[in-house]
Length: 382
Ligand code: GLA
Image 1: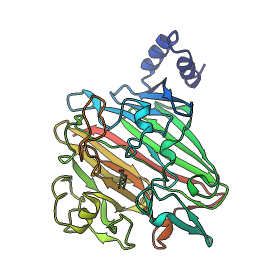
Image 2: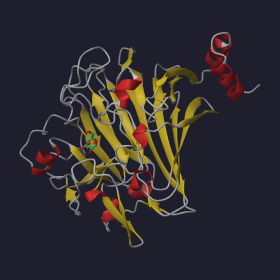
Image 3: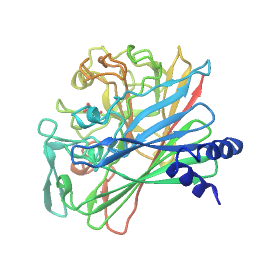
Image 4: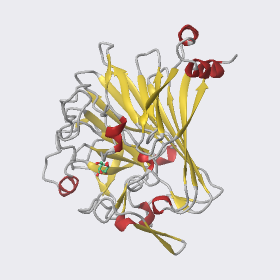
């Protein structure tokens, strides 16, 4: 029996196979996967949770609803593993409107102006769910669908391969889009996310992950003391509805310069038109070294816990969103609420509104092509 079948056996026969699984796996020092029931949607669909755990103190929980990361624990400098992502404790809370906590985002992450775009002379109209604009794939985007799951073992890492078929016309987008998102946890405390998609008609794709991090492990604290690096000389400036103006702007001598490590809070309240429009940072940076493919894009460091997170990606852009719209109404897991700026997102992606911006890298996917995008979140202590 190989490890793949050993693991699926231990998962499907939880309980009596548990000892077998634990001894075999720890002896070989690999990442484990444990499946459990998470809940049932209003439509009666079963939702499962998968816990991926390594032997270095890192674990991540992912549910089949929205491909949501509901929990991610990593060690601090004392070796204590703590929760570092914002989240809820029940499926019902994830089914209520919320700002995409932990979710997979698609078919188009970020905004599309006036909820319209054209392909080959035909105009497609999407739902306007953010003023006049479309945001994050629409009201019933990938963050609210049930994903099929396959468990995959490769070397020491363990992966969950999520699959979803987004039908032609769903949320207004053309073409049947088959999407795979593979979450892998390694023994090196890295969570890797691989996005793949194919279509049977010309369409647009821009997939991302919307986890909110607070590396302090203390959700009563803001993230303003987190020190950020973003390897980008320019940003994509936006108008007052957060749609790109079409030009890029240098970060030099602005609060957007994170080329050298800087606390999120250092300049967030400066008088700056872009900061005013975003209520803080809610912008896409034009990443450097795009020709290199998969490369360092950004990092976040929380000095008290010592936790460092490094983000690598194949994408041209990264949206830093500093939880500006969190307003103390959403519940934490332990009875408090998430106040403004208690989490930040680093969403790797193509630039917002690319389908309507002829000078931005294309987000069009044609039949016969394969969309592929990779991002990793590597955790360590500094
Ligand atoms: C993205 C957007 C923000 C906001 C959040 C969720 O980061 O750019 O403006 O919508 O998602 O609230």
